Amino acid sequence: QIVRKFIETVSSAREKRGLKRRWPVKKILFIPNEDARDALIELKSLAMAQANSKEIEVVSKVGDGIRRDNEKYIAMEFEYGELFIDVERSEEIIKEGFSRELVRRIQQMRKEMDLKVEAFIEVNIEIDDQKLPDLIRDKIDYISNETRAKGLYINEEHKKFKKSWDIEHKEFIISIGKCG
Image 1 (cartoon, helix red, strand yellow):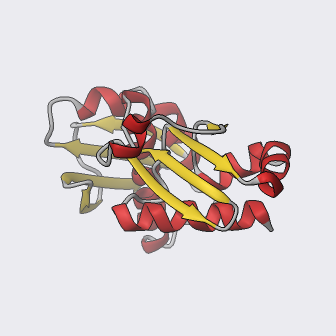
Image 2 (cartoon, rainbow, N blue to C red):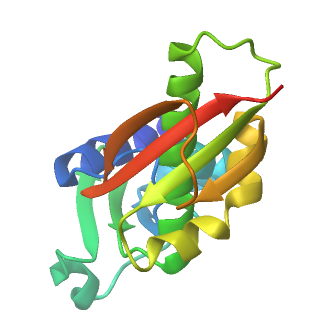
Image 3 (cartoon, rainbow, N blue to C red):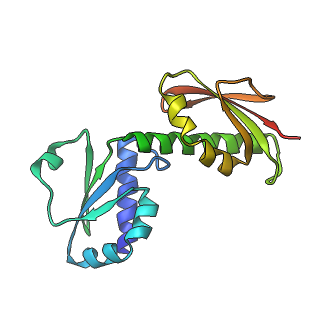
């Protein structure tokens, strides 16, 4: 119950700031009341997975800098304590977030093409951004495995089925074609 309420509070805080649940957060600092400390420590890995956080740190207090830094932290109180979500996006979090977003869009396109689950595809992702192609290249294996892509290309020739997507205010043109 305590962990469930913790997850609900994290979700509510993310929603307030407009942070999608698909994007991981760097860290959550949690100041628990006495009842909550043991429960969160015992179920920490579950809480991390459900909150989509790289780290959860149970602490007795946080500094005034963290309390005042509304750009980097979302603070929220609930019946079992107070939490501070570090929303700063490292390069790794950006890579992971965009790759998850791309997997979701490609899977949606597979569904629209009425492809069988076991069908292999080829994918081309056109990105009109200088930095993103390199970040996405680091996650090609993950995206390919999740979408059953035999070939995943960036800024190459488009495949048969093509769609434009807005992801985090960046335009992505994704095209897919069935292999064989």
